[in-house]
Amino acid sequence: MSSPASILHDVFGYERFRGSQADIVDHVCAGGDALVLMPTGGGKSLCYQIPAIARQQADHGITVVVSPLIALMHDQVGALHEAGVEAAFLNSSLSFDEAIAVEKRLQRGELTLLYAAPERVTTPRFLAQLDALAQRGQLALFAIDEAHCVSQWGHDFRPEYRALAVLHERYPAVPRIALTATADALTRADIVERLQLQEARQFVSSFDRPNIRYRIVEKKDPSTQLLRFIEQEHEGDAGVVYCQSRKRVEETAEMLAGQGIQALPYHAGLDASIRQANQDRFLREDGIVMVATIAFGMGIDKPDVRFVAHLDMPKNIEGYYQETGRAGRDGLPAQAWMAYGLQDVVNQRRMIDESPAGDDFKQVMRGKLDALLALAEATDCRRQRLLAYFGEDSRPCGNCDNCLAPPQVWDGTDAARKLLSTIYRVQQKSGIGFGAGHLMDIVRGRQTDKVAQFGHEQVSTFGVGASYSEAQLRGVLRQLVATGAVGVDAQAFNTLHLTEGSRAVLKGEQQVLLRESISQPASRKRASGRTSAAPAAAAGLTADGQARFAALKAWRADVARSHNLPAYVIFHDATLAAIAAAAPSSVSDLEGISGIGARKLEAYGEAVLQVVAEAG
Image (cartoon, rainbow, N blue to C red):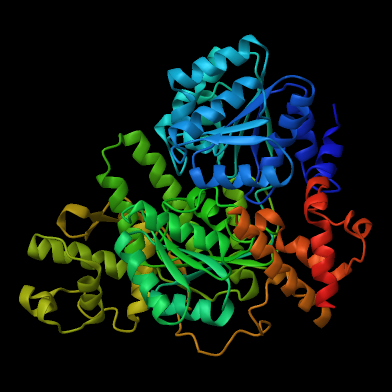
């Protein structure tokens, strides 16, 4: 049996393990169960792929990988084939004959890894095949990817994951490794219970992604704000823009495309063939911006996504962290940008309140939303708050918006009391509730048709907040709703009402501190430090190195197209940049370059040398 370190080098082309990878691999190779929490881009796949290879060499048989997405299975299996590892998948993309052929290879012991969806793994047919392998002692390992899907407290709960407990009940001697990038303490405990991993060793890596710059801006004109952000800082870059609704997805994609940006829509309402075509373009072409609902993204391994933008606030920090983590998987600089406003807070509160879930579940979801709102309103380091949510201590990062440009803070307690008093008085006078816009008009003393219709110019608080801007009052209301000091009546057109939490603010016992509005219209001037759309990986190359890098990318694109794989499965940008910098002239010169294993060296070494030589 090869050592894990030699498999890492010979098969995958890497010199050393990162972080806790070595400990995880050794533990699983020895037959131990493991729960692995590792950030996106941290190398989770190697934590089960290397044990799968090692345990098969020790005659333990095949590793079954439970994976929720067809696209992810396809790319993972393609990458393993490129590295010389026998792998296959069973999913609905295969014809009946193709599926039968894979099953026969499984029973003949010809595979090292088999990927399958949780729905398939728990069927009687599949379990019968596992039974046959278990009787011959040929089940090496179960790997459960995206394990947070098993938890109702997680951000992407999938009921079919609950049935995976059958693997431990039916095959107790087969080790299991469950992996996720996102799980707070509550979700982690649920994973352990649902998958019966009480005896498993837990490996919790740092959640920090230091290459990602977190920025959260106040919504003013979100479409324009997004456009300026992309034009000024990410022209020609691959990115993902998340929207809450399908309509918003299509409108945003159309708007960006109309401004010359290669933007494509993705949501569950699109025809499956269109969704697949758009996803394939995103994975296989450079510079595509995918505008999507959260239906898109889990398991997307594209390493060179330079930004993730949110036009609407996610439900919780886990969702935010998982989605933003799709940026900068290659470790190079990337940005997580979000615009949020009062309506986001109202919408998220309403969705929780209207859900058919029980009160306990709603209470947990409110707490998770509160944590995200606190992150959005924060005036201190974003990264510190984000990591603290996952139980990790850290220092100010110096790379988020608040660290780079500390915001001014103002005391909004007086404005909050005036707004709360107005809510009380108009409801007392009219017997009904009103929305945020009308309440702000009263406080600012604006004579609108609606104010006149209800006689609200007679309310004692009319005009008492004339010195406050609409943006200031909106910020105050946003925080009052976020903290529960103001309630939202979803059944009455999102009207606002007082709650038990209003009392402390009205009495002056609770201070309301807010960040100054920084939602100024962005100029059209390009951000400094970015003079071209050259990939970040090639930024440090000389002019000759840039030429070699461009030639290598063109060659890689042709190879990837012929193999029907994303380009990064052949070689990552970082590997191409290292080749371009080294300007190798012999196969031996390529051997020490990260990302070039024995199989890839044999398959592509001579072609790479020819491309480098011709590029000069």
